[in-house]
Each structure stands twice: as C-alpha cells, then as structure tokens.
Length: 292
Image 1 (cartoon, rainbow, N blue to C red):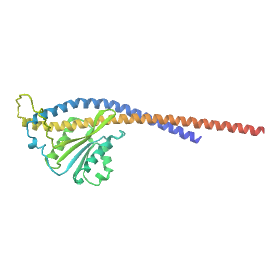
Image 2: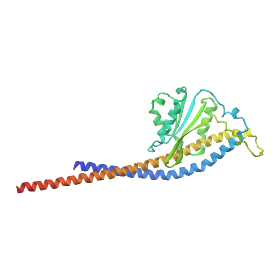
Image 3: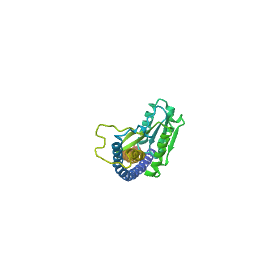
Image 4: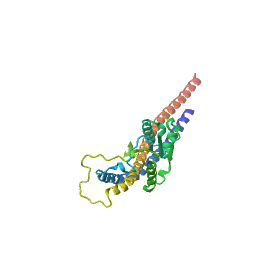
C-alpha cells in the first residue's frame, strides 16, 4: 500500500503542476496579444523611416557623419536583449549562444563587451567562463519596468555617446525577432556605425523635391531618431517573442503533465488491481487451509 500512496502523491503533484503551467499559458497568451499589437503597429513606421533615410542618403556621402565613421580594431559592444523571467524554452539561451559565437570571431576577446538588457542573460553569462573571467559585463535590468520609447531613447542616446566618444568602434544588437507565437528568430543587427545604403540605381529620389532645411541637416536629425526606433523595435520584437515562447513552452509542459498524469493513473489502477488480487488470493488460501 505504500507504493500506492507514493503514486497518489505523484498524481496530485503532477496535477498541481499542470494547473500552474495552464494558468501561465493563459497569462502569456493575454500578454502576447498586447505585445503583438505593439510590434505590428511599430514595424510599418520603422520600415518607412528607413526608406526615407535611404532615399535621402542615396545621393549623399555619409562618411562624414559622426555615426557613419568606419573604424578598424578597437572595442566591440554586443547589446543582448533577453527576458527578466525564465520558463520560456530556449529563448534566452539562444541569445547567449549567438553573442558567444559572435564574440569568438573577434580578434581580441578582451575588447568585447556585453550590455545585457534583461536579467536572464546576465545570469546565464555570469556562469560561463567566456565572459565571467573578463570583467567587462554591463547590465540593464530595468528595461522592462517601463517599455516606452522615451526610456529606450535614453539607452540609445547612451550607446550613441559611447560610439561618438570612441569608447566602442562597433555596436551590434542581438535579439529574438517575433515571427508568430510558435516561432522566434535570432537576429543580429549592426547598430553603429551606420551602414551606407545599398544603391541599385533606383534608390535615389525620383521626384523633384525642395528640401527645407537641406538634405544634410535632415539626415543629421533622422539618423539619431532612426537609431532610437531601431532599438525600440528590437525590444518590442523581443517582448512579443518572449510571451510567444513562454506560451508555447507552457502549452507543451501542460500537455506533457497531462500525459504523465494519465500514465501514473494507469499505473496506479494496475497496482491497486494487483493489490486487491493478492488480498483475494490470501483470503482464498486461508480459507482452504482451514478446510484442509
């Protein structure tokens, strides 16, 4: 009977776990709807802003711009965007894996720095020898406390100042791009320096426009705004991808718990049936012994 009690306890434990994972799945589904609406509304604006910047800069030389200066060597900063909470499958590990792979391609690992936007990436990186042995880990855990364009702009301004001052010669953003609730794709985007637009002969402005102020002044104003939008879009993408990954992970966990509970109940019924059969055999055997 002790074995039956153990199985009952396991069935009860799995049932409690299944209720938790099911509730977390529903919470993530509700948050996903809001996060998905935010990134879907943001993407057209970001794409259009990039088109305008490309159109204006197609006939200009961006090499003289402070954010377009190409530098050799120096320090590289990887901005890794993760979540503050776990239970979302490989969402955070995929970011750390990509940052680690990119870091190993650098000539000098001591010149590689990491800005962690999210608590989980910081926690994972601190456990790895690649980063923990080198004291250059920077972190920003408060990014999701108020995920607004104003707050993200402050981070973007800090990154731009670090580049302009020469502290870093290259800055990359690594994040999970939201595709759908079940699919997230790890993206690596060059944040700074600004890459010159690819010209195919059709990117130049086809209309006869009069610019006020000049194209150069408009470019000077658009580039910082474009960088802020780029970082904000990456965070919105990551936020939506996180909820999608967690919803999918909790859905799978709930299904696995349900399957395990069925197996345990089947095993419990078999063990109970075997115990009852043994009791009957003992009774029958005792009665035959008395009659002998």
